[in-house]
Structures are given as structure tokens and as C-alpha cells.
Length: 481
Image (cartoon, rainbow, N blue to C red):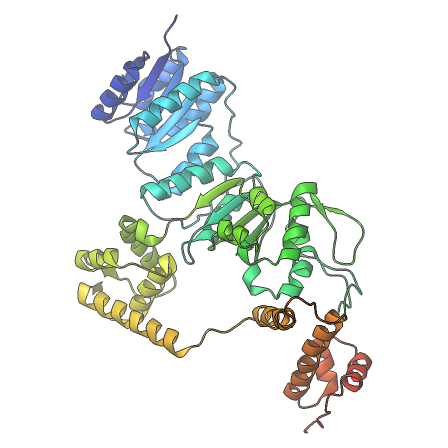
């Protein structure tokens, strides 16, 4: 049986030797070169069954060879490797048409498995169309965790697979979502983001799917929702764990059927969007509590991406700091830098606010302090001050209960008060009137009795408001001039 020949190109003799020995033990013939020119001569001569090349070579960029190889020998697969491990490198590798990309250092067992898979899957290598965007997404870091994210993003940008991004607040989940869009095949379409936690529960369905004129009180005209606004592009649903159950059901139907209807509408609209979601909450735990649909979770979790907290990738902090200092300089702030002792101190902090907290610290120091070089003592003082301020705020600010939580607690009291007996019929109308009366009364109080303003704020017709004031026996406050 003929043994496959692997062509390996890397300017580092040690790496060439280690790879050759590892693949040789697996029964492959290996030829090594220290430059791109030699590799290209071998390829043109029809040699080799697989190429492994470094990105940065002494006589050029290994990725520049990939389109040439695809045109000259379309069935010859290429694996790229690089020590310059950034999102940009991973994306460019994917766009060039490589079979896979490995950031250095890598596990030799991973390389061997990759070689076996590449040789077992013959096929035509796609030639890139040269239309890659040149915009930059600030995903920074060389840690192993970030390298895996880069590889995932690079693999996913040319697909429409649904992605669920998880991670603590401040880790950069939206940056990953934007990278998936801006480097993907839908990049010419819109990127529409909506935060589930920031939208009142009763408005979420209208926000997502739009509504028809007259669909509910205050719907004076047709309005498009985020699904319509994102047609041809990407819809990013942030904090998906805060989506109410009724909206979860409608979203599941969209994912299953590929179409939706507006609130109050009857005509289905095709959903030509890519769905990317994110959450800082544990959805599996929410499922166990009955707060999140399990079937929806599996529809959203097609490809999971976990963004690690900053405390799990402390070695990325110097690169992040340099990036934030450059951004501050571009915003007109003076040129600054941190000395090594200060950077070492930053790497020992736990960063409960993650990358967002680090960015705020860097920008604050750049704006407020005159030193050109920040030392450890200043960093210590700032970190201690930020911590004490946060603790004071937490102690002084009581947790604000949401209206939905208060309403749920109140409604449960009706059932608890009756033990095994259900409350009297007409509970829906009773609860609605209990909420409606203070809503109108407080709004009238805020507008100093101006019913025209109150009706506008409530989204009601003025005559409807007057009728409710009479029905609910709400005291009328005379408007003050």
C-alpha cells in the first residue's frame, strides 16, 4: 500500500523535525522545507498528498500560497499553523481555503488526528472570492481558551448555524456575535441586537415580531419587529435566559418553521436571519426550574461558544491593556503605558467585571493621571478604591424587585390563601383591575392631572382614559398651570 506523503514547511528547524518524527511514526512519508518557494516548487511538480505550512515564512506568507494551490491542485488539502495567534489570522486562514488552522503551540496528537482526517476526506478545495472585509473586531488574547474561540469563529463565519454564546457579564459575548456577522456571508446584511433583559415582558413579542395596526391598545400603526429589521443579516438575542415563556414558544416556532407572523397579523413572513444568542445565566438550571424550554435550548445550542472570564486568561491582560491604551489615544487621551510591576499586579486581580472592568480602569487612569508610566502603587490604589466603592454601593442600594416578580408573588398569594381550594372565578379581570388602577392613578399624578399627557404616555385614547377613570373611581387631580 502506497504511503501518503506530507509536505511540511516551517522556518523553524526544530518544529520541522518534531512534526516529521510524529508523522513518521504514523507511517507517513514526510518532506520538510524551510521556505515557501521550495514548498511551491514541490506542489507544482505534483508532489505530496497533504501540505502543512507555517503562516509567517522568511520569503512570504504561507496563506498566500493556499489560493494558488487550490487553483493548481484543487484536491490538495492544506493545514496552516501560526504562532501569530489572533482572530485575524484564524479568519484569514479560513477565508484562504485551508482544511484547518492550528495555533502554536499545539498538541502533536491533535495534528496527527487532523492529518488522518484531511487525508480521509478528499475533495475540491474552495478558492476564496477575495471579498473578505477589512474591518477589525477587538477580540484580544493569545491564551489557549481564546485560540479555541478564534478557531470556532473562523469555522462558523461561512455557515448559518445557530450559535449560543455563554459567559459572565463583561467577557465580550457581543463582540463574538459581531465577529460571526461581520466576517460571515451575511455581512452585507444588518446586524440587529436586542437585550431580552432590557425589554418589558409585555412588549417582547411586539419588539421581536412587530405588530399590526390595532393589534393592542396604543398600536396606532404597523411596526416592524427585530426579525423583519434583521432580514438578510444576523439577529443577536442577548440575555436569552431572561426571555419570558410566551416569547420562548413563539421563538421556538420560528426556529422550527422558518417563518413568523406579526402580533395581530395572519400572513406568515419568511425568517431570513441567522440567530445568535447569548446569556450569562445557566440555562440548564433554568430548565430544571421550569423557567426555560428544553426544546428551545436544543434549538439554540447548535454550536456553543463559552467565553472564559478574565481570571481564567490572565496572560491576556497585557495585550488587552495595550489595546485599550491605543483606543484611549485614538480618542484623544495622552499616550500612556504600564510598567511591568503594574501589569503583574493587574494579572493578580480577580476582575469580577471581566474585560469591561479592565477597560474602564485603563481608560480612567489614562484620563485622570498625568504620569506617562503607571506603576504598581497607582494600580493598587485604584483597585482598592474601586472595590470599596462597589461594596458601599451594594450595601447602600437595596435590590429592586421587578414588576413581574412582584406580580407573581402577589398572584401566588391568592392560591396560598385558599389552601386546597381555588380562588373565586374572574381572577384575570380582578388582577388586571388591581394593576390598572395604580398605573393610571400614578400616571395622572405624574402629569399633574393632565389627561391628554397621561393618555399619550399610556398609549390610550383620551376618551378611553376618561372612561377608565370613571369605572375605576380614580380621583381626578386638577391640572396645575
